[in-house]
Image (cartoon, rainbow, N blue to C red):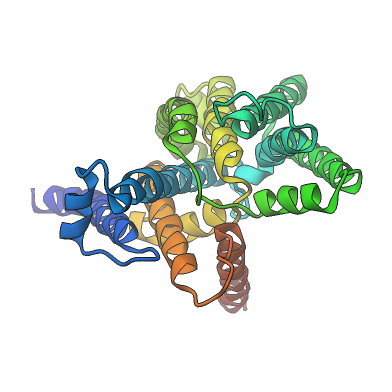
Length: 338
């Protein structure tokens, strides 16, 4: 009983600590801004409808904080799932090309102005979601021809390269310097200046993808023993592949559509948390979702605290933090294999 009790504590300790950290960080995020507020002030201003500070808390800070939480959790979860499925420590949501497809769709909306005059403020997210859906369809069609993990990776690389080239082409033919600047700024990734409309548009898709990927935990556990062994244990590889493709697409597509391209979250978080869950790919899913939310919340807080005239895009900051981490990881792995 003592061993089972200890195992139970270890299983729930990491998610519990991460959940508490996410709640505390989200509250700090609501307090940080041009005007710093105490937690008591935040709760007081939420209910005051007519005052400018109350409007700022409800319409600016709350959507920004919630979007950072949602996008970070989706990126972290998709990274952990794809690393477990491909057994590749460098896999993340960009591996499938879904990010690039969503970025291309959103950039086309920015370039053409299509749907931006609709008055609903969802032109760019709708374009991004359409691009992600198209990229997912192409990847699924290619992967279905040869049913292997390597084919899925190659299909994602091909789609990502094509979407990236087309995005560059749109930038090249941008009608004005202002339009090109707007496209580039959106591609850098940010959760600032987003509204409840954006959150309402993206959240249902994210939630469905979240649930779909979480159901793959048992399959990812079995896959650590190899594809043949996993199949002998009753795991349908075709069902696992489709669940991961669709689930990641439904999370990452809307996340990229509303927040732009935010890299390294899905790469870094699973590496940091894997030792804490004893390298169990099923337990890593929930931990990475919470860790991704925590990382993006802190990154967004940091960009607001930096003493610069123009606020740094959070996608730039995650890249600046992520690249040194992987240099450190390379040297660490080099020492292990020497």
